[in-house]
Image 1 (cartoon, rainbow, N blue to C red):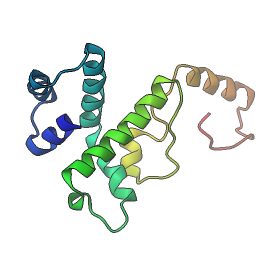
Image 2 (image 1 turned 90 degrees about the horizontal axis):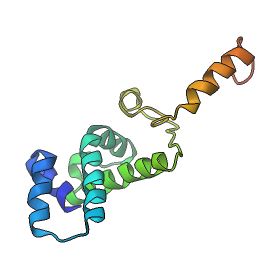
Image 3 (image 1 turned 60 degrees about the vertical axis):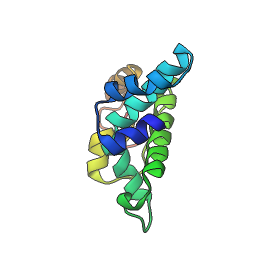
Image 4 (image 1 turned 135 degrees about the horizontal axis):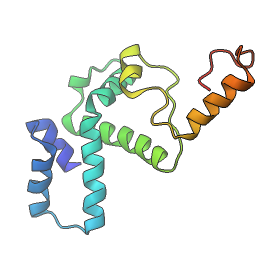
Length: 136
């Protein structure tokens, strides 16, 4: 959380911020790796996460949220998606502006089995009679 806050305030390269942060902070190597992974992912996806936050922030512009609130929301959304994908689960967006869907995709990262299922569906239902327009 502290690294994400510092990044928001300074827009420094994540690797530099990590190096500075860990000079003064103590943690086991596994904890450091996990924290760095979350931080780097939230920074990498920040634009898409901000769009998602903005879409669901009724009566609040993103800039009106405090820096720490934005960091908490970014980290939480990134971690939800990352933990689902690491357990081979999927996060599906039911609705979002087209720009958000293009950046993060409605389905997240799909595994290799999706390609196999798509081929099977095209063979078994070439006219798309069953559930037309569906992803698979």
